[in-house]
Image 1 (cartoon, helix red, strand yellow):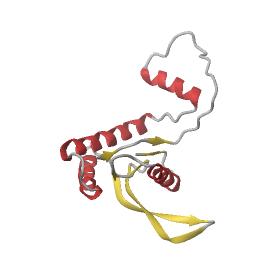
Image 2 (cartoon, one colour):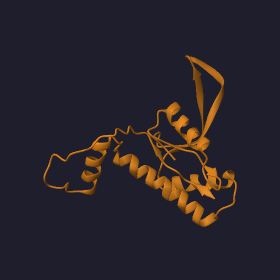
Image 3 (cartoon, one colour):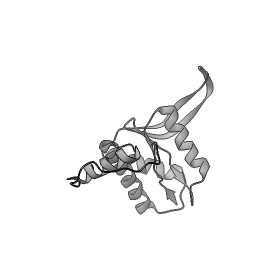
Amino acid sequence: MFCVSAYVLRSVVGRICVPTKAAPPYTAFEAGAAFAACRLVLVDASLNVITGQIIGAAIEVHRILGPGLLESSYMPCLQFELAAANLRFLAERAVPILYKGMELDAKYRIDLLVENRVVVEVKSADYLLPVHQAQVLTYMRLTGCPAGL
């Protein structure tokens, strides 16, 4: 099964939000921004559009190819769909590993870096393990990208 799981860096603070206005927000975006302000969640409409397009492309690939193939089979199809959606991406981007200012000989390879903002790690598995989540979060930290799928 082709898995897509989203992670967005956020800071969650347990506090109660009291609305300052009596009137409700006028648009869905304003409502989301008001909620995010209460929870300190990342609100970036362009990032949401990009991740939505990536997830749509992944769903299209899975809809056509179905489950059970290797990642190497899904990857060129996903790249085709991203290009069709006019999204810029880098495939198999090498990311250096730094330790106390020293660059190690080893490098990580990110499956896709879309629009220089979203790390995409393609997995072909029945379910995602915590190590897969940790991998995406590490890639996000190393690249400085605000989102990962």
